[in-house]
Length: 209
Image 1 (spheres, rainbow, N blue to C red):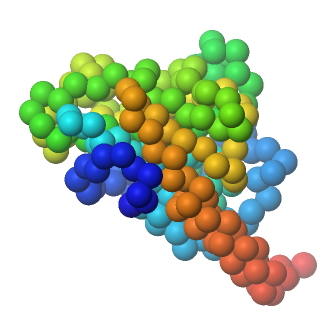
Image 2 (image 1 turned 90 degrees about the vertical axis):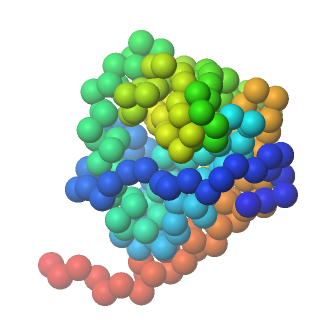
């Protein structure tokens, strides 16, 4: 946890089962040239985490340039999760008028009984621009009530407009709280791992013809 996190919550159990892999076509871009299956980072290495008095918030970028650097099982799990929600994501992006949305997984974990949360208050600032969610695709049945009990979680996929760069400094905010430690923690870990993955890929024998 970086010193930039204004408040601390409890360590929560991560979500997402290990599933088969598949990537929706609209998520692939020219910059997604990293090979898959060679990453070694864990979710906790890159998740943005902070807390209010009622909930802990975890924000996990789902850009290919990020999740391809995670452990193979984690990458496959997240990839399949995106695939299973592809129709809803496509529909939400179309309604929002965003052709290439930036996907982020947001989790709220209850710290107290009947903890309240406001999904729309999650914002990301990147390259000096404030990004608000253009659409939200819930993953948890508890999401719609915007209230969870202690140790309960509510998870959703957020769609933001394109333009967020996870290779540069950024901050995540919620109701006056801000975590701006991305550049000192997760971003550096991703840059180191990116170099290692590319080196591992170069050391692999060429495929047989």
